[in-house]
Image (cartoon, rainbow, N blue to C red):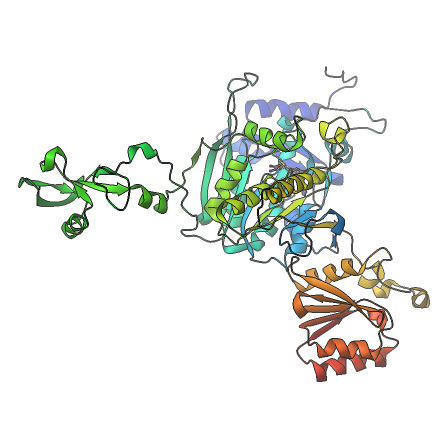
Length: 608
Ligand SMILES: C[S@@+](CC[C@H](N)C(=O)[O-])C[C@H]1O[C@@H](n2cnc3c(N)ncnc32)[C@H](O)[C@@H]1O
């Protein structure tokens, strides 16, 4: 039940609302002081609607919203965050090439820019649809609708709600657009030249998404806005009409024949092999075709038939010679060509935009129940059928697939399942914020306190199941958590430090960071992938880390003796990293630089 307002209304707001009721297209969003977003009348639009001329000088074709520029800047701004390895939560850390990253995807996408630039073949995302009930996102952090109300001031100091915060007032559109825009800008950089992005969405933001994708990926790289049946049955609860569909947007990085054909849906009963053709069962199709080549053919009974034929004359004779034509009516009828089942299967068929035969979201819930028992542990999973369809359309057997709104990790599940079916070695990167599960939810009661725990539990369950069944594909995952920088603030702005305090500062690295944290921080900085093999060895009490056979060697100990520097230089790594504080003094540091120049001139040496 709605609460009484118990205060007079804002007349200005009421007037805007009244005009908005008459002319919805004349109401727009704008930013007020203190970053609040509010509604106002677009007077140009109102004048136009009332038939008054307005200046055309500043007209241009564009799609914009409150916060667009800031979202762009947000995507471009650097981050000092890092990814910290979580070995305890990982599976087969040493051998796997799959990744699960817990953290806000804006930060994570920024962190992956160097290591995975142009390396991702397929992205699938299923972002919040902005239903008015899902979370609201603000530039670089996530807030729930209550915090949002506080931020934009629709609760007063005494916590009284001043007006209803529904999505119908349109206030949420700008924030949602900013949220998705900055992430897509970053995601595009990660796509390979032949890469493809699939985006699930419903009617709430589909029009905005189309415009944003046109801008980010280019209108010419629009492949399709597929309509997908999301419910098997309709719930008679909606107003006017029951929405049982949603959309899958497909954009590519570059224009061209990008998508694979899909398995043809074939009724095998239509195929027979009455003459024991060694190419197997076939069905016959007419050779005639309106507007085709005109010539005369002779049937086995000697009858001459002049027609418009589907094939050029020389092709016709080639088919005849290859026993690919049959003449019905005892050899007297018009020729028909053989369409072999094997060839039809191999050729596949183009996918189309009407996705009514892929599994529904209800099926996705059943799939999740099959893993977690009979409780709804996650509200919005996508079905494996949809994800495998996308994978078949857009990936090769060794592609990397990214989902940065991973949820229950159905994309990871689909990758494992498809690899198991076709012997592929596709690898996935899942990104999921550590969003808390409602304490009253079944998930929480079952011990899953965050959505990322659910996603990882699914990966583990599927992995265990497949291992039990004897699958030999990569069923592991390396888990990382996005966290603030490994370095203290002094590292970034030493000039801010009072010189007299410097000697007190033992290290510029945060005390709670392990060697492995530092190693992976360096990998991100240097743009190395996160899934390569590495080993650590202890030599004379010093720990040496070698990444991918010498792509990088690091030693993060203090007071490293010459012997260790020499040993590392002799191994001639491509890169070497040490702590800045490992040198006793500046001359020692210069000596090490000289040592590498002589022993391993191609090694790039850095300190942190
Ligand atoms: C609609 S669900 C995706 C469901 C998923 N496709 C599946 O099949 O399980 C969207 C997910 O994105 C996550 N999410 C929302 N904002 C995020 C962000 N900024 N960074 C990472 N994950 C986010 C939510 O927690 C939620 O789990």
